[in-house]
Length: 318
Image (tube, rainbow, N blue to C red; front, side, top):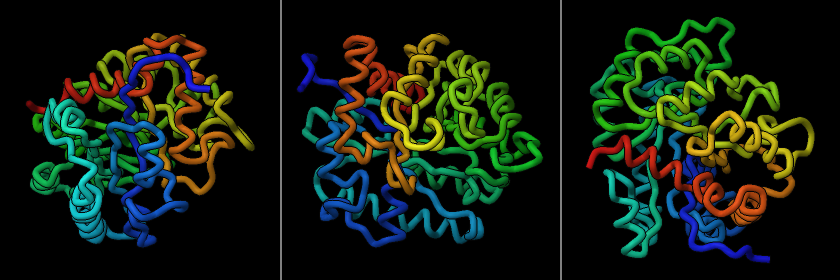
């Protein structure tokens, strides 16, 4: 049964749609059953702004990753935007303009800055191509920092510190998901703008290296940023997990003072199996209704998209 609340802005801060389109040859508008977030499922989810992530497997060299990223960017503009239903987010106010004109929005985000290859000119070029967010690492080390999968965590490299400063200058969103813990604290020291963890959960609830400790969450809140709770089953709990398990993470983050610092980062199309009742984008209204029942309309709307919009507006240039 549909709950009684007004129009809700919905933002998903992380999905690997372009990765699967590139790797498997799937079509965004034509696919019906394979993509977790094809166009039809995004509509059913009510998503107004989708982060389209540029992810490349670490088996490729940084130069090869750059080439694949460029192919994905071209696919975003030619197929997703070219299909006539989406417009990109390039500057502050684009979301409102796109909504008013009847379009959904897409924001390009790099997952793992390997492709930057220790050259800030590549970062600036990616910005000019429309990239507005970047996760500094994936699980492995790169020229920016060590990922959370490395045995030795050396934090940000000197170049990595320059990357954070340059992203702040350009108006790009700094994403610490996948970053090693020392690198996380280095970002907290260097960053002068809100920081996000686009897809992670609370480590106090489920002890996984990709989840954040309470002191990390509170530090993230102090930047004005947010955490996007994610639907990756192994980050939610053990075995089969459901919305009820995800709600434990949300409860905990809210108890830490995260009402204004909590969003959604599904990681759809980047996961091999799903939660039992969040199988694809079409199931997202189930979570929305659970949030409404548990916390009321105002908090539900913050989590579903309001908090992410605030962060985006505070970082992107006008």
